[in-house]
Amino acid sequence: MAVKQRELATGQELLRIENLYTQFFTEQGVVKAVDGVSFSIEQGKTLGIVGESGCGKSITAMSIMRLLPEPRGRIVEGKITFYPPDENSVDLTALDRHSPEMRSIRGRHIAMIFQEPMTSLNPVYTVGAQITEAIQLHQKVNKETARSRAIEVLEQVDIPDPERRIDEYPHQMSGGQRQRAMIAMALSCYPSLLIADEPTTALDVTIQAKILRNMRGLQKQYGMAIMLITHDLGVIGQMADEVLVMYVGKKVEQAGVRNIFHNPLHPYTQGLIKSIPLIGLRGKKLLPITGSVPSPYNLPKGCYFAPRCPSAMDRCRQEAPSEVEAEPGHLVSCWLYK
Ligand SMILES: Nc1ncnc2c1ncn2[C@@H]1O[C@H](COP(=O)(O)OP(=O)(O)OP(=O)(O)O)[C@@H](O)[C@H]1O
Ligand SMILES: [Mg+2]
Image 1 (tube, helix red, strand yellow):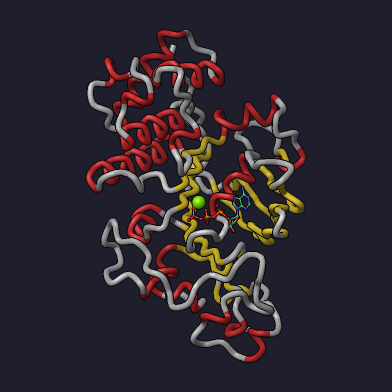
Image 2 (cartoon, rainbow, N blue to C red):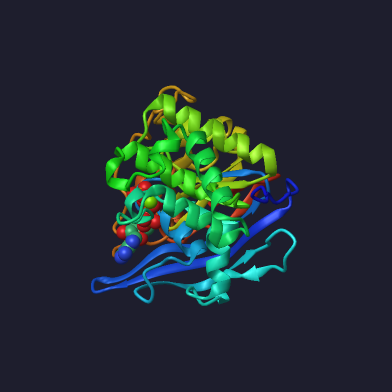
């Protein structure tokens, strides 16, 4: 009996986020980690999310997965509608995060590769036991089938000698191998949506390229959607269909990947693009734009980017811009386009 793959129709809406506000309630004040963000992800497509450290990329992902450290950090407003293939749609914000329904969505339908590999591997179980358990939790297959599927995914992420290494504990693997084992675990259940948070940052360039190729291969094979969070614009250029640019909890621009690189509209996106000397050169990190990101406890009035913006006008320092569709399918929040 083979592990069942679900057939997904490319282009259909799989996830829709509407006006999401996620906040942390700390002793110093409220951190508006995600501040009114909306977007959707289509089946079979890759949405890239970029932006400087602290802009809310991981917290957007954790909100979808309902893995926030509640109640300290929680969704305070918004809707996250998930359209699972062949099942009724569900608002993830309305579910109890510990409920069987949410647990079944996590892993089976939506899998996540975490920025920090040790958060999802348990040190007291072998890597194989963990992947096999994940497969058996979500698919009705016997142990043998699950084990051979686990070996197959370990091979797909380039773990050498997977038949033997499947019985190793996480600490017996190198950091890069652990990260790949985690990627294997995420892929093992054929999720319809893979959320990958800086999935290849700790890996060397050759292995990174191979894993990205494998991810794309699986995506083509059965229509998996990918939400790819990365600092690496080279990876975005290679992988993404659509790109969302975030700044201090807000989406400042969204467009198809070609437009983001060749016709960026927001001065922040323009800064990001200009800060890489050679677009498409893999492994190039974003260089900081002049000035720094404001403190979440002391945000400027108006547009949060205004203090660093070369094109800032008086209005920008008074009023926050709302989103406009500057050209078909190209969204931007900036007073230059009003
Ligand atoms: N547990 C927490 N308690 C308080 N604030 C938090 C917590 N986790 C995240 N934040 C805050 O939420 C905001 C968004 O953080 P997030 O982790 O989403 O950033 P990011 O875009 O993923 O950054 P990076 O590129 O560094 O991973 C930041 O201001 C961060 O300080
Ligand atoms: Mg992050």
